[in-house]
Image (cartoon, rainbow, N blue to C red; front, side):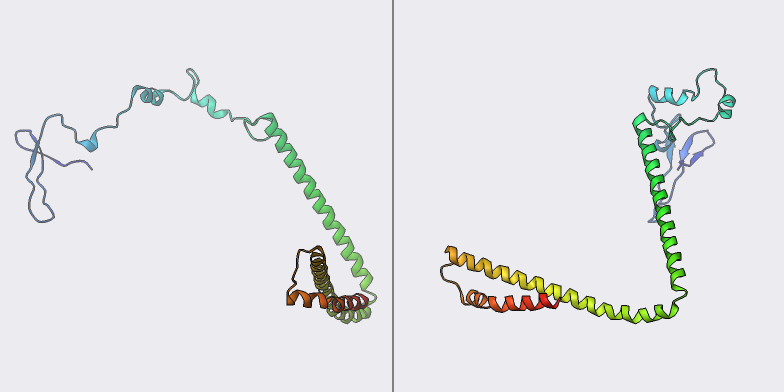
Length: 203
């Protein structure tokens, strides 16, 4: 903000008196001839900065009208200023993208052909399709039961493996005094084997 100067009858400059927030007044100050306030002092620029600011953008002798008509041409290969390897990589990416699009289009056309063939096959036998729906629903509980059996078989095999490992450790002398739980585990071996056989036969 520029400082407000007041000139008196003799031509001397003064900074006008101003009022403080508490109501008192600052007295006016005389300004010497040639004084420039700090906020109005221009920023210092060295000779190199001045040179580059004054340097013209165009080469000497070239008119701005001539450059306006010429648009910068892009080098071959898309992006300007790319190296050979970058251009090669761009071409590879483009080729890969086109192949993916082609593959997706072929897969989509194949699925559309399958859907249309299935629809034509189902049109004459609509009652059979309605009959097939309950059987599909009844298959779902069977598949759930099969997965449950498979889980039980896996669990039983794991338990049997643990029993065998415990027995081998006892025979090797690693476990000299087996605990009550370990003895119970060994005693359950036959029952586990029978249960596993029954489940495997049920599958």
